[in-house]
Length: 271
Image (cartoon, rainbow, N blue to C red; front, side):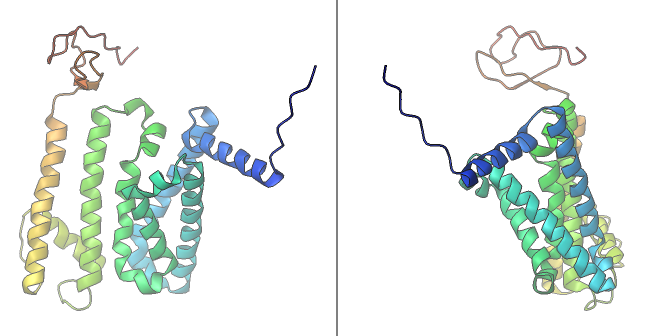
């Protein structure tokens, strides 16, 4: 009997690369406890990075210390993005995601803080990219995935992100040049007062652009508040696709699909 020709072994470098990619895919996408613990650690680091972004306007006065922390955060974020890209099945599809571009821009502001410091307020978009990501909900929110808790958290994340991004923009644009905005707290106070349409009038932005910004903050703030209120008041539904018509969400105690009448068998959440 003739033996089948054996396939050539993969080069050591390529084999090592394949093992590394498989390991990263397991850590970033796996469901076993070690992978979940790894992602929990990544999320804790993400929250610490967001805390640094929030404190950046104050820490910036520390000089060299601020830049050391800034580059350390850049190194951590760069490693995380590189690992996510390598673990992804299709890197081109990963690069097309809006959240990827946001993270890459955040990395650029960290690598070039002297040139892009005025755009540093956009770093706080990390709040939204984290709390709105499947990475977060597959890890921390496994029990709450596709439920009311997830919807409320996503709506709240959008509102909080908007507040801090606008605050950072107001601080970066008007601090020092407008007597009403002398610090970060003043910018936050103006943003909250405008967003809630309270309109105390003790801090107002000058010129037509200041009025335009105030109008945008009021309109966007009302929209985000309404979205959050609707999410809080909306009747609770569970995700259970109907086999006949494809309706995705139903009442927790529904026995028939309200769209087509098809019998449903929705698992009890407590079971």
